[in-house]
Image (tube, rainbow, N blue to C red):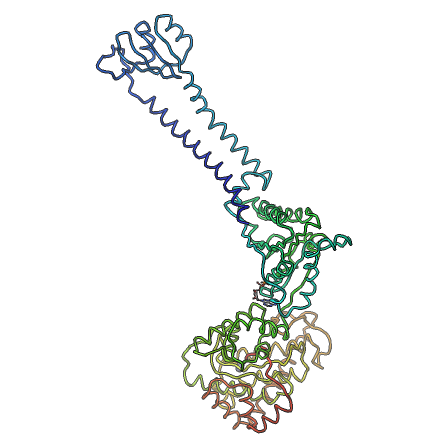
Length: 634
Ligand code: ADP
Ligand code: ZN
């Protein structure tokens, strides 16, 4: 790959070098010329004094006047040197005039005209001009002709397309958890391997495949694996590399890239962040025009190569909606594969795949890690394992333990552990707050996700948290679960009230209250869970939506919504208070244990609440393991 650009670079720099040399020659000549004319000239008409071999300097009129005295003269352009009849050497600047020279020779002077030097002189004058003209022509050719032009070559040489290349060893075995997508792309591999078979049947194979999905979902990995499976070269570049300040460069780069691909076909040409060039064409700013040209060139190239050449262009983007529809037409990126964030099974598979690279303790349950990482991409999961390994090293563990991985996940999700010094009374309050969440959480264990752990170790903005992990990737909640979750959310504040008194409550419940309010609002206005408001959708909003103007709602309905939210939250709060007051002793014990151990696992919490035996009975009955979902309770 590198050679491609090297060749053009050599040629371009040779040309540039020549130009620079010529330029210097012109400059030098100008100065030398000036010096010539600056030579001291004897302006008086006095007789030249014969002193030595050093030539005297005569003016043109001197020469004219003393033509008879001249024995010989040799002329080179306007410069003349000669000898007078008395033997004095002279030099003069004359204006070149053949008639005058003829007259001189008639008067007996030996005239010699150095014409060879004159030609050189002439060349010296004209050559730079010719080269200037050539250079200008060259530039214009470059501007018009894109990559075929010399300028583009120079620019390409100076701004080479960043292409990584090689025959990857990556195979589909290195891609885990996205089996459906792999299956879909298998066809491409088949085509690259058996072009002729496809050709014989007249099957049209996509030239372009668009992989869309969040960053880190393995788009590059998949593209690489296709090349690896088919054992063809893989050229990777990024769309952002084609846009820049130099107009026309993108076009040149696209041409260059496809030329290279054609030379190496069959091969995979991978363009990451293709939205950088493939954005919808709309506005008309200067920059956009350039991008449009680049996009057009890409379209031209994709239409240009014959199907059987065996070039497959794979584009990747996380914004497929931003792409110009022209790109998605048949014959271009007509195959689209959406890569979703991995689900529980997918995460488990990815973790197991990457775990091979690390020394993981046999006690580690990767399944639990998978449960706790909803929303993680493949890259996030790999990062988690690596962070876990780093933590294990710091902690002096012999292998990566569950606690290391927990730590890594929390760090990735919420920022690193705060080493903030907290006042003892704040720590105590946090412990009772979290104990409140944890206790009510355990009470509703049959309805909501099981508790993974409770901690009073501050992290990010949270002073502590109780984490629930789902058993699987569930997508909806029952109304009972909503009610239970509201009670759990508000139990932190409720516990503060019960143990410290209503005048000692803190702002620490801010995010709990926020979360509860959103959940209640969503349930009532969007999910149709409120019997008072019925099934009408008052505003499209998600649990995480922001509060805005209520749409499709009269003033009266809006008031009803507000009242209903208040009712739900008040009811949840009352439930929490009731549960906590009735079990004040147990909650107190939980808080004390938290203060002692900082972090309690779900099982430990159950043990404290139900006692050891009861816990064992309960867990065997339910065979529920700890699941995962971030639901922090500060
Ligand atoms: P993208 O191109 O979608 O941003 P990458 O392909 O660059 O993502 O993924 C980055 C890394 O994350 C990969 O090199 C790989 O180690 C890991 N990874 C992502 N998805 C997967 C997966 N499905 N299976 C295995 N590893 C994955
Ligand atoms: Zn809380």
